[in-house]
Structure formats: structure tokens, C-alpha cells
Length: 187
Image: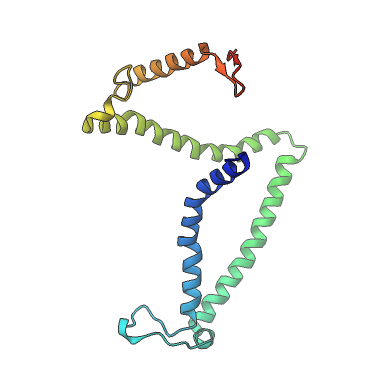
């Protein structure tokens, strides 16, 4: 297998699950919704009633309905006003953090701190998983408790870190084999 073929295969292997999810969640519902929009389908219709093509009749009925027109106009106005407001505020804030102000760095920190919250929450979740969920799973399924020749590091975080440290040090002392067979050290 050539390097280009292997690269292409790896690309498609990584893309396949995401592509499958996108097709199932976005593409198929879009086309089904478009199909049903031109039929007499309703959520309360009986299964044996059958679908009948009605063309643009559904859309004409919608635009004759006063409740729909009211909702549509409110949504349209909200969209336009929201778009204008967001851009004006964004422009003002951009000037605030790039202008020659005394507290420019404080404003920048104020904008950056909310980006840290997601990472902190994710860190707490992984801490819970490693400290509570995995050891509990190792007690429930005994084979998961002994995953190393060095012992039960799933149960004890300190032993786990020592094992990883020892294995990393051992890897540093092993020669690194190149593709051409020549050995070299990691240092």
C-alpha cells in the first residue's frame, strides 16, 4: 500500500463516523422535511391515509394565516435588530480592547476568562471519571483492575502515575529505531 493510499484510507476512516452522523442528523431530515412540505402529511394523520402531493398549497395556507404572519414578522424584526445590535456591540468591544486605553489588558482578560470555564468544567469531569468511575468499574469487573504487569494502578492513582513515569523513563533509555535500521537515542 502506497503512502498516499494509506493516507487516503486513514482520512476516510476518521471521516466516516462524522459523515454518517451528519447524514443521519442533517441531510436525511432536510430532504424528508422538504418532501413532506409538498404533501398532505400531518403528525396526526392515520398511517393508512396515504400521502398526496399538494404542491405549494401548504405554503399558501401558511401565509394566509394571521398567527403565522404575526410570528413571521416578529421573528424577522428580531433577526434584523439582533444582527445590528450584535455587530454594533462587537465593534465597540473590539475598539475597547485594541484602543490605547489604560485598562486595555484588564478588558482583554475579562473577555478571555469565560473561555477558561469550559476547560475547568471538563477538567473536573475527567477528574471525577479517573478518581471515581474507573476505580469503581475496576471493582465491578475484576479483569479491568489488573491491566498492567506492574499491579492495580487503576485502583491507586499514585501507583498509576509511578507506572507511567517508570515506563516513560524506560522508553527514554531505549534506542530509537529509524526506518532505515539505524539506531539513535531519544536524547
